[in-house]
Length: 92
Image 1 (spheres, one colour):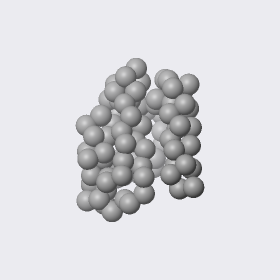
Image 2: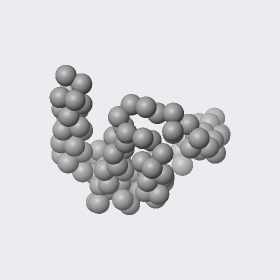
Image 3: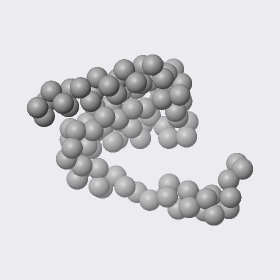
Image 4: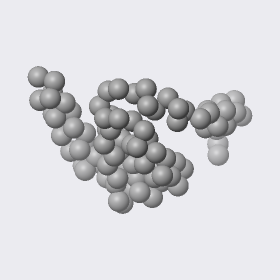
């Protein structure tokens, strides 16, 4: 709300770009973290990403909105650390 007109214009242009066709090109393991109560970017968007990124996992934070790292910090950190550990084991 308090952002500059330039930032608002940039955000408006950014959010109207359809990046879905590029999701299939992501080949790396991908962890998608999403707040169930995210009304800025709805959960269905995270589900679309998960469906279209071959090696992806979607973790939904039941008590979070747009910022699960703030809403559920401890859970968020534990999930990220566990995921990074699993990559380390997987990749040796």
